[in-house]
Structure formats: structure tokens, C-alpha cells
Length: 346
Image 1 (cartoon, rainbow, N blue to C red):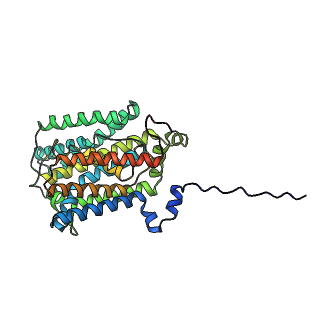
Image 2 (cartoon, rainbow, N blue to C red):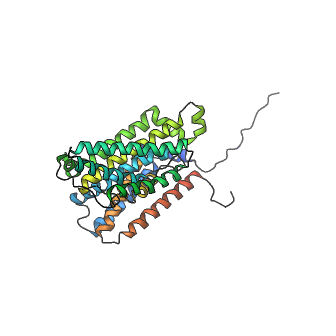
Image 3 (cartoon, rainbow, N blue to C red):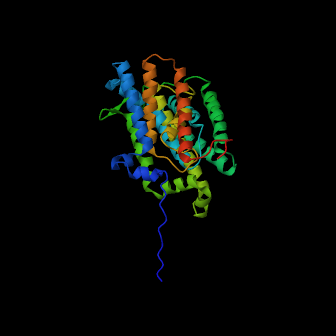
């Protein structure tokens, strides 16, 4: 007797994210849903403010937006890296302030030229970044608490060094003038620095073992440890990298404003950097994110901020908008992850 089996009826359920992604056009799938949303929002902002103000889309104003977004972009890039590996750095704005003050004060007091001031700023960046990493790793302090302490401490240090006011004058030096106001192939030098850092970090994350290990640490630190990845070393190096890039941002702030700024120009940068990273798709739980999305988010925030300023809207509303965007980004992440709401049943 021959036994025949009847195939079980197929059950059609909701399409998974992978199924939906496979049905997208190839070029859209390559861009990613998060980035498509950012591009759409950026277009809306550009069109809206372009209609409200004839000069908004002018080449000169686009250059202003790019220069203003450079410092935020640098910090957002390294913030993305630390979020990918499951950390966070709230102290980046204060680190920028310390580096700005040190670069200007060393330059003006020694009379040895811009390079010594810049080297001193980078050295301080290495120290404060490594200190954050050591406190987090060996002090076993939560990254949010450790860098929140750093936010206050480094801000206080910058104010102590500068007596709470702008220090030095650097626009009598060709190097500072070149960094703050120079152009290469029609683009500001500051923007080129952002491009170089962005491309370097993107390649590091996407095509090297270091990048793969960072994603592994953020995705599942226990599995990463069992796989032989030295998590402590990676975390210390990442926070040191943040200090170096924050120092570069501080030097650019000095070059752009003409003097060392302990607070003005650096306060609030941590919120902008975290908001840009979250909007760009970096999961605050770690293991996910990319530089392309972060740069799109930086552009969106820069265009929105400039548009509000051009329209004469109270600058306090910019903080409201940034806070709202951060909440929206986190809500979207939670919805996509499928995690239940706090205190509510499954």
C-alpha cells in the first residue's frame, strides 16, 4: 500500500521586513528605508524654506549651512561609532570647548605658531577621551553617567582655563585662516575635513574587522567576548577616538570664530550629535547604524536650523525641534524593533 501525504495548507502571514526589502527596486533597497525617509524630509525642508525665502537656496546660504553643520557632523560621526558598540558620549560638546580654549591659549601664549596650539588641543582630546573610556571600563560606570559627569567636568575645566570668556586671537595666523575660511576646489576646508573623516570612518566600519567587531560588541557583547574580541580595548579606543575628533572640532571652532570658546559654540553640541546619530538609524541599544544616514540627518538638522533662523523664528524653538526629532527617532526605532511599550502587556 502506498502512503501519500497531503501538503499542509500554506498560511499567509504579514510580510517580514526582509520580504518587503526584497520587493523594492534595487537602488532603493541599497539606500535603505531610513535614508529614504531622511532624503524625503530633507527635500520637504528645502522646498518649504525655499518658497518662503528666495535667498534660502542660494549658493552662499548653502555654504553657510555646510560650514555650520561641519562641527556637528564630526561629532555625530563619532557618536554613531560609540552608539554602534553600545555606548554613548554626552560630554562631546564640553570636550570641544576645552580643545578650543587650549588651541587658542597655547597659540597666543607661546607665539610658536598654529601647529603647537593644534597639537596641544589634540593631546588634551586624547587624554579626556581615554579618561572617559577608562572610567567606563575599569570603573564599571554606565556610559551615560560617566560622560554626563564628563560634560560637567570638562565644561568647568574650559571655564577655569579661560576664566569663563573667549581667549586669544588666532586670525593673524595663516593656518587658522585657512582652516576657518579657506577653500579647496570651491568647497570650504572645514567641509573637506568632514568628508575625509566621514569616508575614513565609513570604510573602517564597513570593510574592516575592526568595524565588524564594533557591530558585534553592540549587538551582543557576551557573544563578542566569547568570540575572543577584547571589548575593553575597543571601548577605550573608541572613546579616545571621540576625544581626538572633538579636539579637531574644537580647533575648527577656534578657527571659525577667531578665538578659543569655552562654552559659546560648543554648548548643546552633544544633543545635536546624538539626535543626528539616532535620526540616521543608529540604534541606541547598539549593533546598528551607518555614517551615510548620520550625514543625511546632519544635513536635515542644519537646513532646518538655518531655515528657522532665516525666517526670524525664535532660536529657542530650535531646541524644541531637536528634542522632538530625537523622541521621534527613538519611537521609530522601538516600533521597528517590535519591543512592547513599558508597563503595557504584550
